[in-house]
Image 1 (cartoon, rainbow, N blue to C red):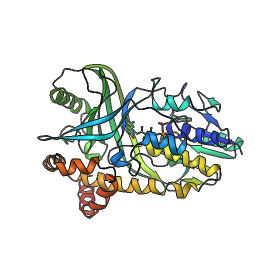
Image 2 (tube, rainbow, N blue to C red):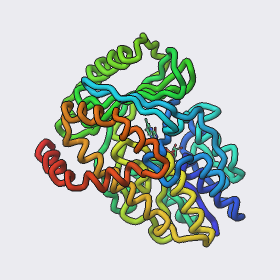
Image 3 (cartoon, rainbow, N blue to C red):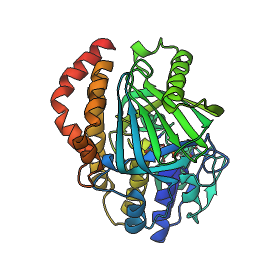
Image 4 (cartoon, helix red, strand yellow):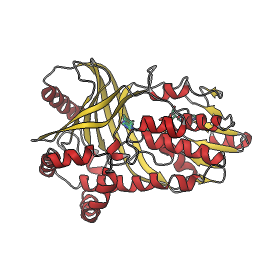
Length: 370
Ligand SMILES: Cc1cc2nc3c(=O)[nH]c(=O)nc-3n(C[C@H](O)[C@H](O)[C@H](O)COP(=O)(O)OP(=O)(O)OC[C@H]3O[C@@H](n4cnc5c(N)ncnc54)[C@H](O)[C@@H]3O)c2cc1C
């Protein structure tokens, strides 16, 4: 068996580590010059969206022998709508860094990989088909998957972010649900130390959003974040991601080609969380290749989470700022706090189920707007 992994990101590296544990040494092809060679940004794992996995770091170590360290654990989330504010407290998740940083998740994974990584790779899928018996497509970009098979693209997203210097509690996250600032999207502040944080604004590229002036939205959003944090942040770095695809592939496996990470459909459309599904799908490909399971079966729960997440996105998209204000008010209640902090409740599953009746109305409204 000769395995080629196309992409040394979260999914590809998790796949390689799992293969190696079972005696298979793949060749990894990475188009960039080193692992994580991209902008630095803070990202998060929120267990409320991943349950029954409560502590993804403990889970990956104990169940899969993959050892990662977070930057910090989240103890507080502040939610800001146009006119309301909510605070959630508890064991709410973990923060990590991505990209060109020694501690980024991809760099941590790459230090556990023994197989060869060919950097600056220009190999195409067709090239790899000639020389390898099995190919894992994990380029993090569904555009590639769509060339090979049917890919159900739901939306693309524009993201703009900055690194700022300021004073932060590195266990406190801020989220803005305000459609005047992020139409049908949201903004967030994730600290990655007590002095630095990533501030990001993201919204879908629907036709009615395409005339929006991102510079103007960004300035308003940034002013609002500074006001809510009562600080004047100093920008030290910037990034922009355009047309980031959210969708899911029709076939997780075609012949001896496997699609994992974002190439499978790891990005959860409601809030854009894709790290854990990306790592898990990479592990599941390896399990299949080692005769320890069937990839199509193993990814079924990820496909279900994707559907639940999409249902939530469609409902949220049908809201206006008034409804977001109400939502944030409800979330501020003791009961909502307990639900989110409870280790037994999968919020994605529960909301996906509860909100399904509203989905039809929401989808209809959205279609009319597009
Ligand atoms: C701004 C932003 C913020 C995010 N925030 C969060 C968050 O807070 N929480 C969360 O859970 N998720 C978040 N996500 C999503 C998460 O980062 C992704 O779902 C996850 O990284 C996908 O992993 P992957 O392995 O599929 O792709 P990646 O980790 O992106 O890896 C893909 C790799 O393939 C390489 N590659 C590309 N093309 C080729 C090619 N042709 N040949 C060889 N190599 C190639 C790339 O260079 C890269 O190294 C965020 C995404 C973005 C963009």
